[in-house]
Amino acid sequence: MTQHYEDSYLELTRREVNEIFMKDEDCTPDIIRVAPGWPIAGSSGVIITDEGVVVVDTGIAGDAPGRVQKIRQRTQVPFHSLIYTHGHLDHAGGAQVFIEDALKRGHPRPGVIGHENVAPRFDKYQRLAGRRAYISRLQFPRRPGAGASSQTPVPMTYVYPDVVVKDAMKFRIGGLTLEIYSAFAETDDCLWVWIPERRVAIIGDLLIGGCPNTGNPLKEQRYTLEWAQTLEIIAGKNPEYVIAGAGPIIRGNLIDVVLLDTAKYLRTIHDQVIDLLNKEFWIEDIIKRVKIPEDLAKKPWLAPTYGHPVFIIHDVYRRYTGWYDGNPSGLFPADSAGIGAEVTDLSGGAGNIMKRAEQLKEQGQSQLALHLIDFAIKGAKDTATRKEALLLKSEILNARADIEPSLIARNILRTGAVTAKDTAEKL
Image (cartoon, rainbow, N blue to C red):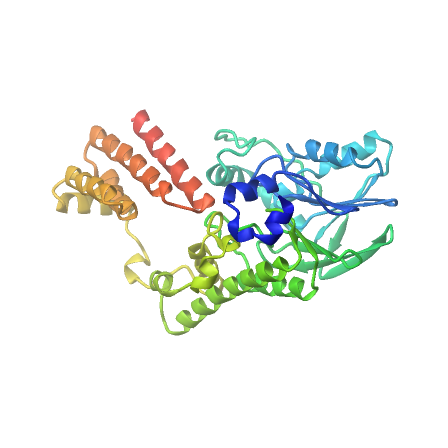
């Protein structure tokens, strides 16, 4: 299957790619990729030497015991170092499990290496624990431990780095050189690892098997241009193997294609947004005018199955300009309930709006229907009408989710549908 992936990526279905991703793979005899126990989580790159084992990314806390067990089935050599490619908890959340395994065996505590911005990230996660739990439920409602809403989020255990990297560092272990480089990409605390003796790059979420996750609508600023630059630097190393956070090991000639296609994809969106900003366009018109070259849009490794090109447009836009959308009416907006009431009255009542929203849904225009139904919800005169409008919104949200390829967007739409239905049933 791995060879098939190398030779014929274009012929693989998404299901086949996922099947490979959920299996461990040997990269070289001393470097392996340990797959996650849950699809939307980062892999671990594991370097095994006589002097110690280096683990690049530890997975989420609940998944880490399984990773430790799989590594221990291969070697009993102590863990030497844990390296975070960034501070997201599907990459750094399992560190304590690895440390506890070492201590139980009487081994020295492994060192933890991370970017200098990992500590501020963990501090932020502590400060915004409630918000983080909420957006995690929106983005990953099926992730283990997502749970239900809580006023007192369960405290997380964060293992802060012992060694911090600003720009780069390297060390030798077991005859191998580990070169560690920093990057701004999905986060401001990215690291990637280059092992020149094996021509292996371990790069975390710099590749995710689809459209890059820059501009995530639930998260803070990301770095589209620097992401492209980093992929170009990695391609310049001429690797023979790439272990990414998501997807199978990439091998041979396919590496340059995937790395450089992804960089080109990010650059073309970035440069078009910059050009349109300089021509005095605002976000709505920019979204309409940015065009992805057809040869890139068709590439399976750029499919919008997780990230989305519209999200990338937003990322670039907010990087270079403010939140104003160009319409002075929105500078100091009126309360949305008041707007909804006015529109509902002008429409002859919420029933007329709901009827038209239902028609639009049946015509396949679910997005336009969503905008209309919100007026009916806000402007409903009685509880029964509002309940009916909320239930219709739930149906429309599910219809919109049915045609949405991006997992992030689809989950937001689905959780919105559940929320609308729950709200209606509580009225």
